[in-house]
Image 1 (cartoon, rainbow, N blue to C red):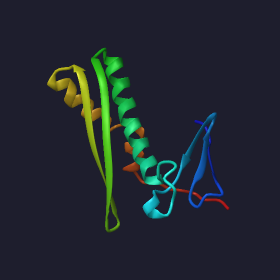
Image 2: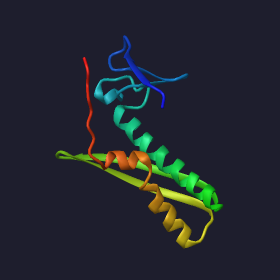
Image 3: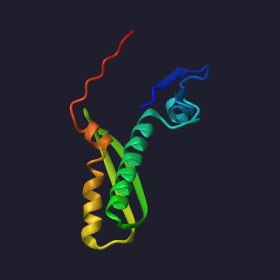
Amino acid sequence: MRTVKVSSTPEKFKQDITIGHLHLNADEPVVAGGRDEGPSPYELLLASLGACKAMTVKMYAERKGWNLAQVAVELSQVKEGDTLKIQVHLTVEGDLDEQQRQRLLEIADRCPIHRTLTSNIEIQSHY
């Protein structure tokens, strides 16, 4: 896995993100004091989860030889007290029967990011 590097910019909250040869920005929305020049950290987290679910579903369907045409994942989050609640709406399209559709929804919850976010996580920060 490639190393992720994040560095600040002269703009208030904007961050440069480098992942191997890929580059993107993170920022906060204007209402939070940013310039909205990239997704916020929470949006990046949701994007990671959604992408992982979609990729996992596609890999599984491909391995099974199922006719999956499209996977769409819509995510949102709300914080209630100390709990972050993530809502996921996953849609699969293709020539699939109901049993296959249900299996793909189950498989989506087994993606590596879903498993990571629902497990015990230890973050070791070094300064």
